[in-house]
Image (cartoon, rainbow, N blue to C red; front, side, top):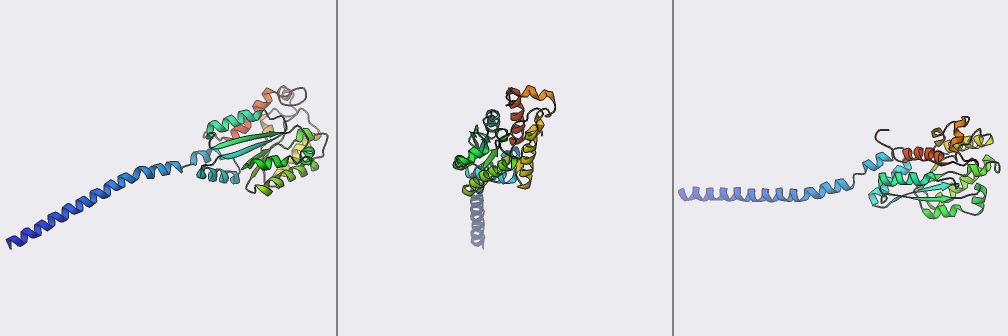
Length: 251
């Protein structure tokens, strides 16, 4: 009996040692895996970027999330007349907030009417950019006094259709040209663009609210003699767009 109990006790001790060894190995393995898991969570947490893009159209935010997950840059293409000096400031704001490796921008300006643009098939230059988001100022100031708003909107439709034919996931945002003091038919063109955006479920960035009212003589301080924006005008325009593309937590 003495030898039997000794043998049983020996087996119990061996079992305890074996269990302790296995349990220790499991704990070491778990600790070894934990840093990798934490790093993976950090790399896939893009909430801060999506919060800054909170103002964007939902389709653009979806494309941004896909770009972040794939590690590919998201492209924003700014298109409009030659009066787009605000773009430098807006691009800088976007790059500093998101990082130039996360979002890239491109700029195409045309000192011509929308009819000349379409007539020369310049929209194919925009197609080639393969941008996920196109911010379009459709030459309303250039068209003023030369084309009816119906013609301008037909040209805008052609631009959008040709781009989407090759890049169907592209999101479009429309914005007006700069305001002028005491506009006449020009104000009807602006209203037509705004209605067109609403009818086609397109985001319309009404940066005019950042300028003095069109019947306020103060507006002339924001414009050159030829009615194009001066430095003060570009600052107002840029501030509005920067606040849209990069939403601050305080907003």
